[in-house]
Length: 296
Image (cartoon, rainbow, N blue to C red):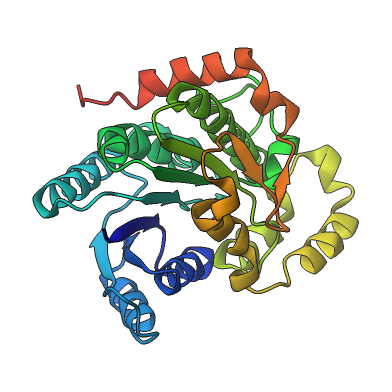
């Protein structure tokens, strides 16, 4: 039976490299993105490799939860109509903002980095379960180590610093990933997190060079942090995609779940806060409040 994969933010960078790798591995790949022109370019590039199945593009602004819901309906309806399973879902979408922004009245970093992949995953669980064995891959980040662990509200106390708020949203998603793995254990749906490490991408070339995105205490160390950052993000996106590809395709992971695949494409220990059941419970309540499965 045909293997199918959906990659969000798959029209460039790490997402496109992930989609290319999945196509080479024999998957029929759907890439999701905001821009139809970039989507057409991604499909053309994937199809130029001579894949077993042609790629396709689905448009969606993943900063809009209404568009996430519409995307989930489209994917589920397509799978039901074709009778083909959804084998792999890669939630690759991510964004960092130098200045505080909102989407639908909710802080944008939390929407894009957690609520969007959370909602898409939850809405597609029936489809993924019907197509089991299947895999969910959520792309995480080393930025979780600088995150505040308060999840009583979308926005933590204190000033807005883009890197820290990005890390907090990624921590929420990592806690959700590990919790979801426990929830789905025994269903045939495996859940993984993939840490791409550093790569030269649009986000790293832009937002990450602004010292205002970190707290004043860390800003004092910015010259050192920036030099370290520039060394760690100099690698190509194709290398940074390897953890996601391993999580999606490595046969040694068959039957396993709840594993973080590190930047070297091998399992690593999860960040301690993400494995804390109290954090997972707080994230679950917050997610259900701000991204209900059915719109109000």
